Image (cartoon, rainbow, N blue to C red; front, side, top):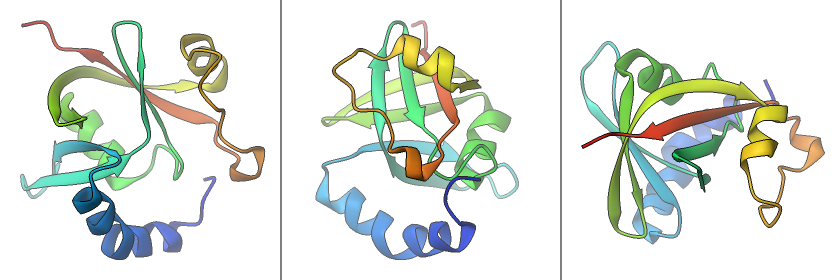
Length: 124
């Protein structure tokens, strides 16, 4: 796991609500796999061909990732627009970097990010 889990708990309770309110980040709306409650998580998401790619700073074991994987879908709000996403899957660096444009900054090596979540645009 790239970032320590304790930092994720602080982030979830202190910084995430501020980031959502600030509106600068994309926000993923997903449903709890046990509770069925809706959750909103700010994140770094990048548009790629056919969908979006999300940097998994805390790894694929994060609650929100497990929620999205269990549900099979989520909604991403980007610049005030809701985008329905489906078919979530964890991909490695090679596939992620091939999908990302050259203009997108790669995560700093010190974070040891090796997993990314790729989701497809839902067909309407």
